[in-house]
Length: 497
Image (cartoon, rainbow, N blue to C red; front, top):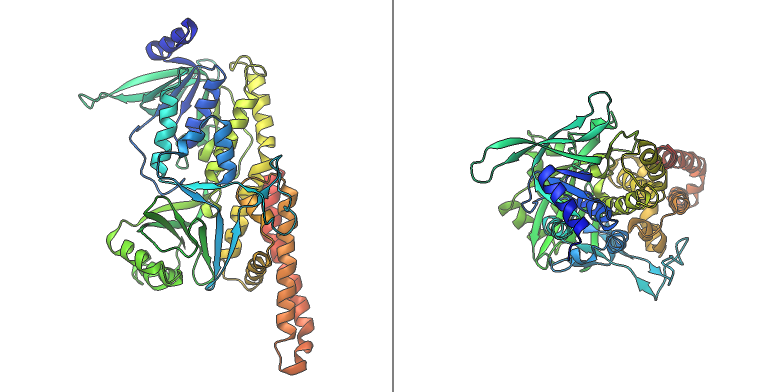
């Protein structure tokens, strides 16, 4: 039952469009942030252009770390009742050979005992969830609609409102469509703090940064019906014979297939028959044989949709009444399915730093700026791992380069030898120690160097192969240099800037 204060604040939101916080965008991050702040007693206006169920090919796999964050937000129920599918880890398929890398065993304190090497045989294992994105977002919106401290409005935000004598953002101007007449009328919503969460194609990113997303490829998506996956309950990563392909279930009968297609590759040119030609001649033949019939049927009769694979490193913000977060602020290649996990952890951290006990008034610019400086650096404990992994693994799996090929072979052999808890714990968002990432990355590099060296000096003929040792040494230096070129700029940008 609403108290008089809660009721008065609801009326303030509905009649005067005033709240403590205005959140622009009711996607995964927007809903999570609105709910987290409302749980602390903040009055929240949540604005969304379309409240119909989204129909998108992104945000369909939530890693274990994201599930943990969702539960801490009080939204764990949102993955239930939507035909979600439990995901227990990955099945990596390299040139027809596969290796399972399950999510790691964890101790009673939530740690990963074998994060440095090996894999636990028994113990608790966290799981992820695959689902239709729209169903999940609809459940998040339902939770926000039911919250007494949140008012949700379907309206199109067109610009931010600034003070007459300063650049302080006071709220947003919108256009609200009359459902009866279809006429759009101007509207305004005001808050002490405006949180922009309008997604990867953000209109308002420029409020805090001049950086723009960089995309060198697209994921083309098919929805397969009743596909026969080699390892049910696992996400599949197919590499080696084509550019990376992802397979994971999003429903009892539905499997999402995502095919990475770099820009301007000859096999997908118009002259060669376009993307459908690439999928038919190169990508689908690289799939496990049991999956190909469903993939061909989906390509023949289904909708082929695409999304850019973007990288946008985070930048410090100096807010004056506004902050930009979610995909509008920070993106990574979706190869590792980390986007929602980052978003949910960001919502948790934002709410912690803006808690009324720490920041009583959101109109206190100095306090809010201090909170967001802390958020920028503290979030790196998880984003540095997830963002670097996404970009580095894509570089390894997609590039046609002899040094990267050696690293790719080393990576697969690393998994084949059973060193999986650390890598999969990082992929799953349950290990938040960047030093673990550095350790495993260079362990893979040195394993790849060793394997290449042995292959070179034993390639014959007979014992004469040892004469190739100097060449193998030169190759080793080149492989290590390539590993540094891939990894060090990323970890510097994501971890220390």
